[in-house]
Image 1 (cartoon, rainbow, N blue to C red):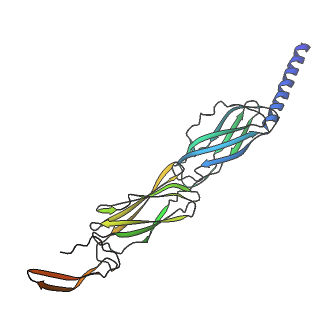
Image 2 (cartoon, helix red, strand yellow):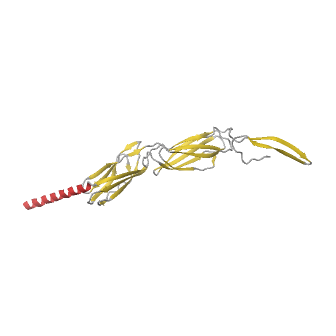
Image 3 (tube, rainbow, N blue to C red):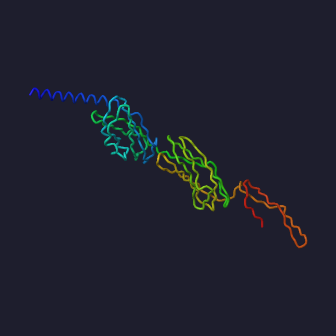
Length: 276
């Protein structure tokens, strides 16, 4: 009986020592970096959270699983790291989680959870911001009224008021009875608080509504900002204005010669002029 008690005591002592050793080894495992794409989410955006952990100790550590815990941020690949394995001394591991921010504006703190096989767990809160301010577009220069059949220039300013960069920014004009020389203008990337100007040459057949669709990406998510401009038709002081004067008629035998001057009194070029 005393021998059995001694064996049990040794087994318990050995298990406790092993647990202490495992806990000590796990204490050297920590989060070294966290990156989010996009950096700032818009409502309903999907993106990624990448967490890097490092074992800075001298012993390998067994990891059972890794996950993101949150009642607000949806994790789309929540079962990816149900079985992780061992992280060796001096080694790093990256965990990539695909998430969806189907919440309102604010700062949320999903919890990165690392479950060690023999030594408890590691918890690390991650700040994830949701802010739905869109890219803005405004008119810099546009005629008060459009001349039918005449080229009209419209200049826009596209501004990024967000805290993170947006990419693939493209401006596309449209509208019934609207013709443009450019089907769209590609701007590219807009850094926070950066603005870029674009100019379109527009023809309007009649009174209508001219629209500009600004599409852009926040991470891999496509968003749109729409600007609509009412188009009224009328004469403009800057349009081409042709004046015919100094007309002379001379006869020489059976021939009659008519001569004169055609003057452009406007402020824009007149093209394809035909005199009959």
